[in-house]
Length: 234
Image (cartoon, rainbow, N blue to C red; front, side, top):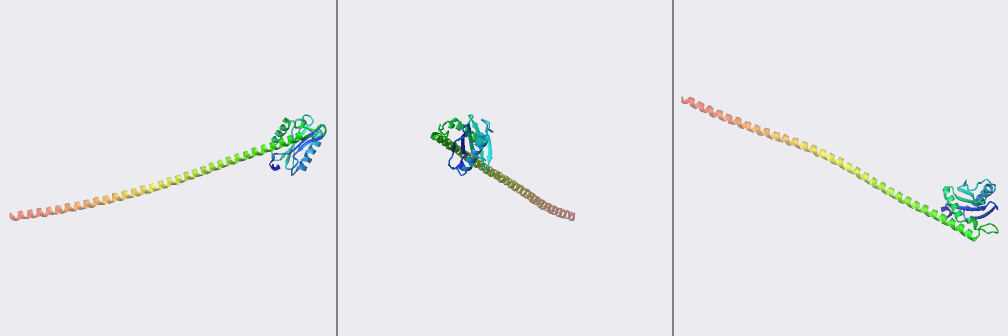
């Protein structure tokens, strides 16, 4: 696994009483010399010189790394290096894991360094811890991607719904305008019809009036003729 994907970058375990380094891991890292040198410096200056209290987590930041260290069981020192951007709680959890597995007891009596079992156990814990960290963050990233996709999909649906609403409003406005036009046309047609009807009535009355006048004239002529004939006969 690439060191750049790891949360735990470097592990340093030492014995304060004997002033020895019990073990370190990994053996390969692009900044291995710097990480080892800085961890050894913390061990010498902060631990051996009695400036660190037991069971108290301490933190030093240098360059792009955080060095989390603690003195446990009176004599045993754990210095865990993580990236500056990572949470120190992960380093604390890793130290607790080392304590649970009693790594500090898997040493050679001769030189107080980790024996083969201890080295393998430290390697296994280191790799498993970082693998789980990588898997968890990958899963979280996938879940975030899924959530992001769902949010984008919801946003697109909302945009489409809003667009449809706007289109519907425009359609309603168009219908209202057409309705007004039809209403206006209907009023105009009604007025025109009424005007034509009125003209027709007027024409009809005019013809009736002319007809009545003609009848009256005829009656007058007839009456006048009868009157004149009657007068002549007398």
